[in-house]
Image 1: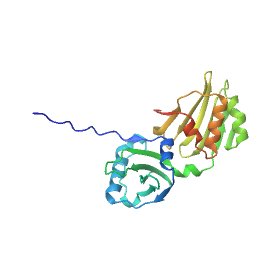
Image 2: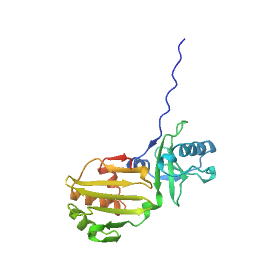
Image 3: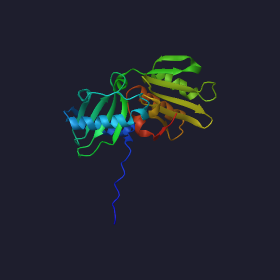
Image 4: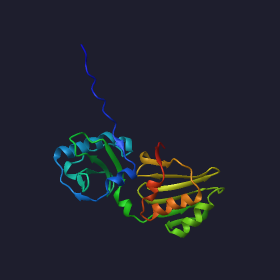
Length: 216
């Protein structure tokens, strides 16, 4: 007697920021979704909550889940509220009747926040501006504190560290469980370019470099 194997359940995929931004192409409209769809989004959120360092799971009412639909492909982004205002675990609901398997943790409010720039060796700590970024980053190599940070808010930031090999870029979305580093070690001009893109609301930094998730 032969038995067919049950297909293995895929682990949900944590989207990178560029993959999420691609879903926004063409625009979104507010959407009404069914209670089963809300339950599916909440189920995925419950499964990954701890792995994202969000603390203990507490039941969330389905009414708190909001949704936006792509004007282009019909995909729905269900927003499950996280621990702070305008911070969500966003679950991708396909147009097909299957369990959701992609998500991202995102502080939507951080996308509209004014970045602050800090560079210890120059004593800089305040609102980000282009002159400070262009001046500070190329001077990092060889300093006792060879790093600089662009902070948006609540754990969402970009940082650069310089050593004898070059400049190492990293960024984080909300918690250390969604921390990424640039695969390539870059030069000072590329590091400045990434910082300027991040500081002033452009997302070129997310597309021009390859990023990999790391454990801290």
